[in-house]
Length: 278
Image 1: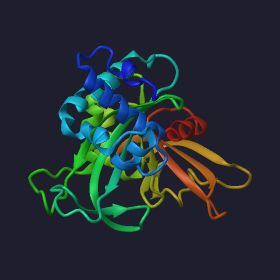
Image 2: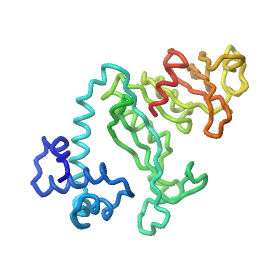
Image 3: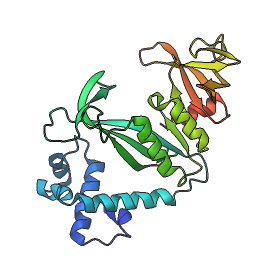
């Protein structure tokens, strides 16, 4: 017998018993199935037939609405005004390499495959404090070549998500990787008083102490001797920011310096602690 997780999710929703059963089956299947999560493997794990699980997809609008309302309710009930909370925004590529009839599937770069992969790309946002993580929403990315009328850059999609959630969670810090770090993004955050911490590419030119240079070569942030990290103020494309640098060990055993950019004048430790939640 599987646990009735749906009673938590849908206790305020008016749905019939059958829909409640289908939703419970699907949620528990996602949680407990350790194999690839499709209808067949979920059905095998839950001890039911394939059609019982597939019923979830026969009325996706109903279940999508219930799940979103329930997750929104959980997120709004969290004490986000206490402690440190973060909204992590990142791009996710759902591979659909052999798809032929999925209209929006297109080729996009995969960091894992180190090359272009056919699939669906979304920019997603989650709320987290390191212990609790709740999905908030996403925006789908459309290829400019295939869908010029629907295309928006990933930075534009991330900004849309920030606009949606900045007033709802005013005390949260947004954390993003280096693909989203641009003058457009930093200026937007500055004008909207949004706290952020982002990865910063080593080859970008910055101004520190009145001198411009690539950040990896800049003496104003360079780590030397026994120092492990540095934190300083500077400018990127005319925007005043704080830079953090830390020596880190790569998986291959080699050492490299990682850079972050933030608008919170804290410390290198605090900046890297925040970015870890991404």
